[in-house]
Length: 296
Image (tube, rainbow, N blue to C red):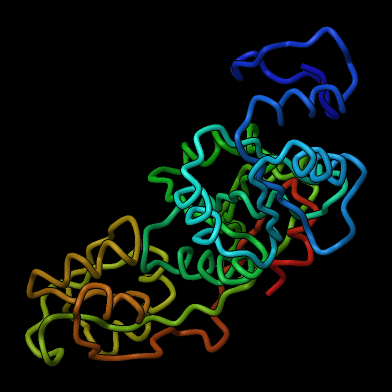
């Protein structure tokens, strides 16, 4: 169970060999397989990868070599199906010899707010940046702040987290000390402007206005002027309030993207008392490659 970073976990069922020679293990893996898939990068193969290719050819094994940064997964699946492959030996460069190869496998971005919220919008911008280098990015929505705080101390190498920490320079996240252990800590500033959404066609007769409490605070002068008699109802996120407005006769202060998400009419746009209203997010990760990858 010898490997570069220690010992391979017991959860992986393998037949142990009595020799610590990597090439002996490579030979056995190839002999017991009917095919070999080599995953490589743009640079020259390292010794172990080239040795695997040579032995696979000598033993007349079915062989497929793919570039992890440019190859399409469909071509690999087609090769497996067309050749009726049953025992596949997957080999290739180690992570230490191919920077960023692990990003091609998976990466999770945790965020606190649902689709349509400003947090989700910012996560999507990061997602688009990461997709240029990462084959499989997943945005994972956390329902409660308590979940986020639990995850922070145990965040894995293939996971990252987006946390809203300030609104117009005022701290909104009390657990900033939890960020100290991360190699990557980037601040991302997102401009925040609200839209008035409803299934109605105008603002006349509006009695209830739904939004997040911070949105009410950031738009209080506008509300007093435009909707002085409205009853304000505070809900968890600006996305949730748009959903409520989509099946009721109320209106919501939300991200304008929610109009498409929940099929609402846009009654007013660019709503906010401050011209430079903004939320600061902190993006944390222990993956060095992401430092240059997701700067926005």
